[in-house]
Amino acid sequence: MGIIKRIRSNFSAALNRIFKRGRTRRIGIYGPPNAGKTTLANRIVRDFTGDVVGSVSNIPHETRRAHRREGVTIKSDNSAITLDIVDTPGLATKIDFQDFMKAGLSEDESRRRAKEATEGVIEAVRWLDDLEGVILVMDATEDPFTQVNVTVIGNMEARNLPLLIAANKIDLENSAPSRIKSAFPQHPMVPISALNGDNIDILYGKIADHFR
Amino acid sequence: MKGIQLDMISKEKLDRLTSVEKIRMILDGVENGKIIVLESGLTPQEETKLIEATMTKITPGEFSGIEIESYPSGASQSWLNKLLKKPGSGSRLTMIGPADQLKMIKRDRDVISALVSAR
Image (tube, one colour):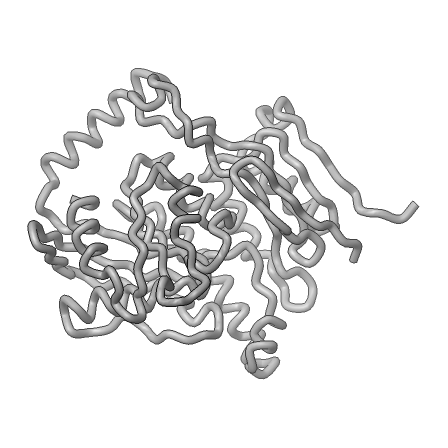
């Protein structure tokens, strides 16, 4: 993109941010399978509406369709923001039905789940074009340098859209959110446990501030 | 000699290809068991298109997808890039192979260590 075009694009984005302030923003919850995306989506939606978004499971690719929950107003101490929250299927570059069999599913169930999971990944990728920001959920017990994380961050940076990292599963002994911070220092990160609610108020404050 | 074919694609060749051609070249190679190394990598948008195209190719028992390894984009930015909000150094060297043959051992900001096995 040429310099003039880029300056014009950034100026236009800044104007949009000023004039669209106060309206509902569409935010996607992204991450690899089993990072805790739906657990986090459920906690946010339950805390502010009393409802849930989807079911959770230890078997990867439990969420195989994107779920949008409209008009969730997140309130923190100093501010509030209304979001459409899109809980997306886990992003992956490989899906092997035998992994589901190892998790205890039958061969038929595993093959069906694998097919639906590939469709889910495609849906998650396509949603990226329709979002105004992303909460990237990473498993703080895992290596943060996964291709999924690198790709989602690269896409948000290329689009100049805000991204907030939720370093999840800090309730687990071997979690190391500091590894995530040092891997991607250019983006804000909040260590949380979506399961137990640890630091969840800090995350809400950051969401209200970052996606405004 | 039996072995694994490694195709190293230069930046010059990649610059001549469209996104569709790059993704086609990568997936054709990987489906045939090759390891593809791209000197200048893919853009983030091309990476998502590659993931999308890979998902359509997955066939249980035959092709389970790809392993793709690249470094994160550069964290350090020039003052001009910061002013223009332009991402750092952009795409970098990338290695792509069949998921059942290429396994990442360790990766950090500047080193990728992977294990390649024969089928």
